[in-house]
Image (cartoon, rainbow, N blue to C red; front, side, top):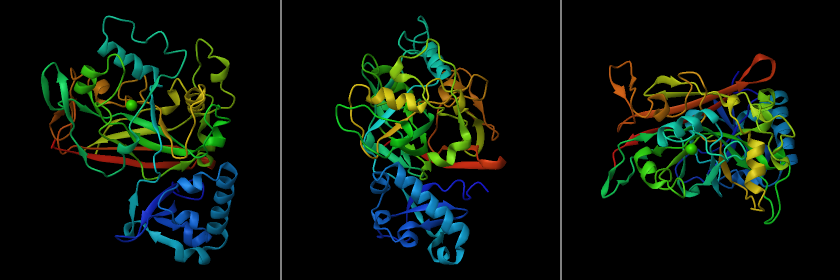
Length: 378
Ligand code: CA
């Protein structure tokens, strides 16, 4: 069972218009209302943030209590299980800061070749640190939110709706426990609450014109979609892998202390047709290294910080997490079963990213889905 006792992702839901959203865990085709079932008002506060701020031992204890109640006392829990079709899911966290990395060596190499064909694809820093930038937290939206095609400058004197709207299939990491300014983060699992799916929508024409020398800006900031479910790290214990070999060996502060590579396979569909299956386990930089790097200068963490992996792309064909790679910058359009072809997204297109990971005893952990439909520029 992909939504059984070994999964139990957290989300935020309401049962009717006007109700303050509440925290629940998904169990099968139901959500368990935690404020009701656990008699704890921290779950009636409209987001996961207050609960996440309690820290890793509270996360462990709560998960144990939920699993125990569901497995040993179903009659007591039954009144707090609400069918998914009776609820609306909301953005599960109040996003504090949003950082996006660039951790796939295949993705970084592919984009280097396309954007800077006369240079080495990887910049000299790439193998020494996980490259990232600060994104726009206020435009992180929950799955299902329509994506308005952005307008902007696409060259000197050229303004209009993006003609090269793309996706980026990524894994996102949600910070639960903060750090004080001037200090470094401690252990990954003491700070990071869980994992979510991310589609970092990207306007390639706006991006290509604006990104030198300061990096991504309006080509990225119009919308970033995340899954309504946050999968706790505890649910991914069977998915942990050492992470890809790194040459040269990273500096000590970036050294991997524990295996935090993750055997997570993403699947990207465009209008219902699978166009790619990006393998997260092949990422060069692992999420513990991203966290260490993000705080090595003393920058503090806040509850609700979201940092994403960057586009997940594998080496084989059909394993890339963006259209710009799948169509090689538009040169090789994707043929869809309805007879149409795509280079970049058209109005009305729906992109859905799902993901799964191995669970205990041969089971499968689903990470839910993040979906969005493109609507015309305004
Ligand atoms: Ca990205």
